Length: 266
Image (cartoon, rainbow, N blue to C red; front, side, top):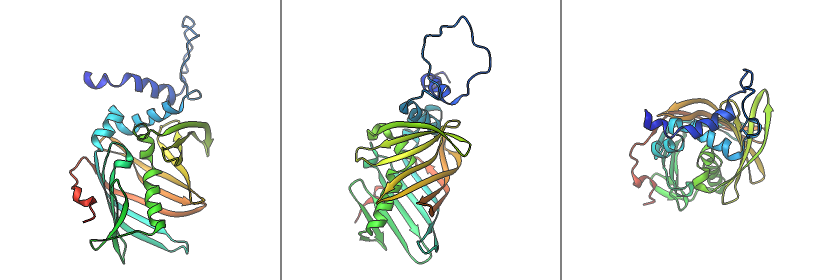
């Protein structure tokens, strides 16, 4: 137990000063008053981000995320709403292998719609598709949507340090009764994502980004722990004011062996 605690004091103090409400007891008149303390109002962008990493990673924060999430296997279903209003539901399997940075990750998503099955793969070099083991080049809109899922994600905040992304704490704002830190992240390719982090829980409740002139927002629901790390099991994506996608995770497992052949073209 002692070994675990040695990693905790700094980040616990940081989290506590950001997230815990002010005490109601009377102040100690003998205490010094000239020292500066971090409060929810004076928190910096990095303090908010680091506290969020700690919340998602559990007892060891970033160390937990790096060790436990070296690989990920996820099953679930996605419902896509077309421009006509027609809904298509697919089951999916998602395989991921963590690299030193997100640009070096490997990712594969197998989707099964009622009338077609195909895969989209990112192997660190490019994105390509697989249909009946035949490689194809996905449509530009499909490639863009796949990229947006990767780069405009909670992971891009949790891994901001290794990605060398820039952070800016825009403001603190109450929306529909919920107090949020509004945090902007800009990665090295100048992709920008705005995160709405709950002041109370330090969870990401929503993110926003713009792509091809369209404003998107994704909301996160049904948070639970998987192998000691925090996961939102449901998310909903809007393009403008229209819901375009809903994803529900059935199961997620971290750390199991994933064969490298899954990400190879041939």
